[in-house]
Amino acid sequence: MISRRHFLLSTLAVPAAGLIATPALAMTPEVFAVDGLAIRGYDPVAYFKEETHVEGSADHAITWKGAEWRFASAENLADFEADPERWAPQYGGYCAYAVANGYTAKTEANAWSIHDGKLYLNFNRAIRARWAVSKERFIREADANWPNVLNA
Image (cartoon, rainbow, N blue to C red; front, side):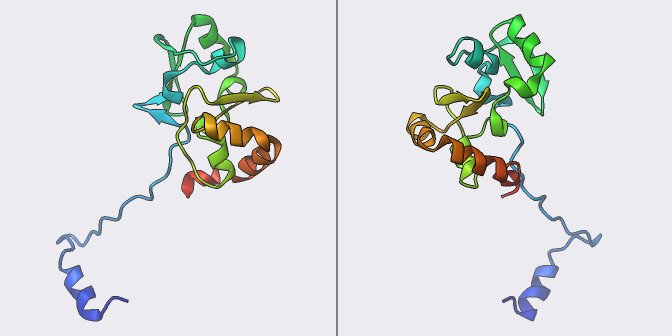
């Protein structure tokens, strides 16, 4: 509890104009990005077409949902532009296991799976193995938590 004296002393630090600066509520961005690159610059379309993680190129890039998405080819870029929701990883590229458990976490490019035509990324391969055991349940839980976990 703040005492009246402490409160009065703290108000002396208020600027003369009477404006109180309040920090904006921190919100996790909708897309997991490192240095502005969605999913660390890996090509989301390649997971489907090549069945592996492939680094994208700055030569084939677009901005979508506030992040730069890179692609290994002009064809993959065109596919993504035509239907980004089809190709983009679920939960903004955050760890699907984490989202299922009510928080966000980074992901690694080699910790991924495709289930029912959707791309899911995980924190690492050990978490991906844990995710795979109860994937259907985790997807239901993550779907229920998304996007509210961004405000947590």
